[in-house]
Amino acid sequence: MVVRWAWEFGDGSMPVDGYAEATHAYAAGGDYLVALTVTDDRGVRGTYSEIVHVEVPAFVDPSWRLYLDGTPRVEGSVGNSAEFVLRQVVVRVCFYDAYGVRLDDVDVEIADLACHERARFVAEVTEFAPLVFLATVEIQSFVAECSVNSRPTREGGRPLV
Image 1 (tube, rainbow, N blue to C red):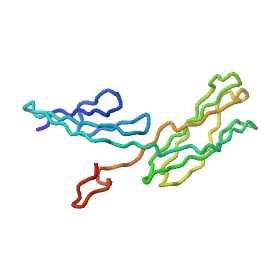
Image 2 (image 1 turned 90 degrees about the vertical axis):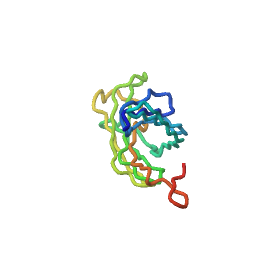
Image 3 (image 1 turned 120 degrees about the vertical axis):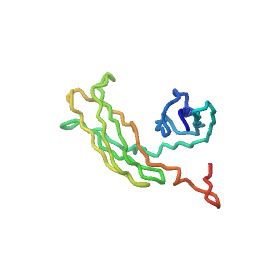
Image 4 (image 1 turned 180 degrees about the horizontal axis):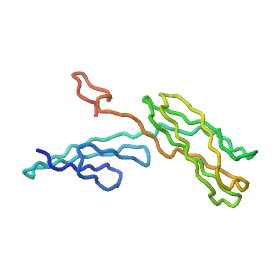
């Protein structure tokens, strides 16, 4: 009987102990060596590792605009460049004054962004509106639903690694 699970995600983060399943957020796309080491009740250990390719499928269209008339706001669109649905995308808009001092952050959540779909977003500043002069826009996070069973397979059903 397995009594310990230890995950290493290949990006320099701390290993995660104690769970048969694990979730991990990567800071950037790339290839990562993910390893799971299990220990049974007799102290016997075994390790399985696999290279996992991480894509950053969510993107902000660079044509977003900052409007300073009335309530300062940013309008733009976010897209999904992947072949799978993004269950959640969070866009962070940061508002600054003329000196580059950050005044406010606004997170906009977009749900269920289909493959190759785009969605519009609007972020309005809530504080210090008369001082806003600049803004930045970036993807804060995204959640994709992926499963081992959805990976491409060879003949005979063995997953391609």
